[in-house]
Image 1 (cartoon, rainbow, N blue to C red):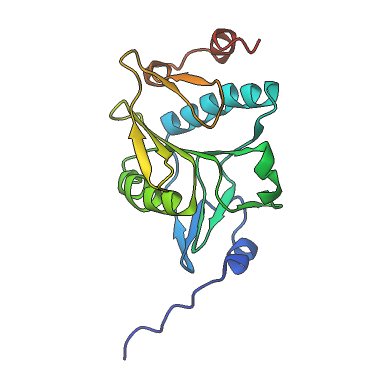
Image 2 (image 1 turned 30 degrees about the horizontal axis):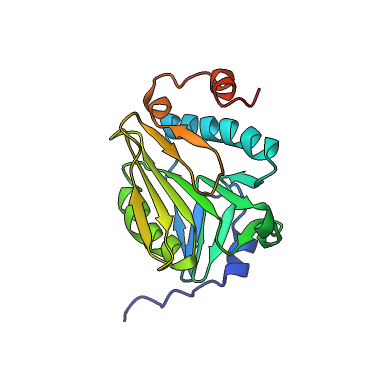
Amino acid sequence: MGEPAKTKLSYEEFLKLYDEDTHAEWVDGEVILLSPASNRHQDLVRFLTAILSPYVEKHQLGVIRPAPFQMKLGLSGREPDLLFVVQEHTERLQENYLDGPADLVIEIISPESRLRDRGEKLAEYELAGVREYWLIDPEEQRADFYILGDDRRYDRRRPQPDGRYRSEVLKGFELDTNWLWRSPLPPVLEILRELRIV
């Protein structure tokens, strides 16, 4: 006799069974448990949240949500490290998930997530209409940026030679990728002054 067939969960069942303390994603009815995040990964998420949130608030651009917060896209419920929703799309925000694509998604790559972030998620985000996707790889000190074109396909962008990247979704925001490779990361207040937020 073979193994009993696994029962697939609906997204609603997934949300009921797994709370914010469970680091997991839902893909086509299956629960994918995620590895614990590294210290560097969490430092980068904290740093990006700390510089992006005041920028978004100052310019009244929309809403930033760091993980754990689900983004429901068709047959998947992903948990990006950071997502941004423009003001005009905030009706997509439900009690504990975003119903539809974020306007900007940021993923910090770890060794175990490299293929998933650069493969599955890139394809899903493109298909779902995530307008801008940042992939930050601290191990390789590499940042890739994807912009959804008029043809609904991603166009990959690299930072300028000086390391700077100007976001298309976060109007006026310029990220210096050199900040991300410093150890320790630069003081948030220093960056907020450079961005003229404080």
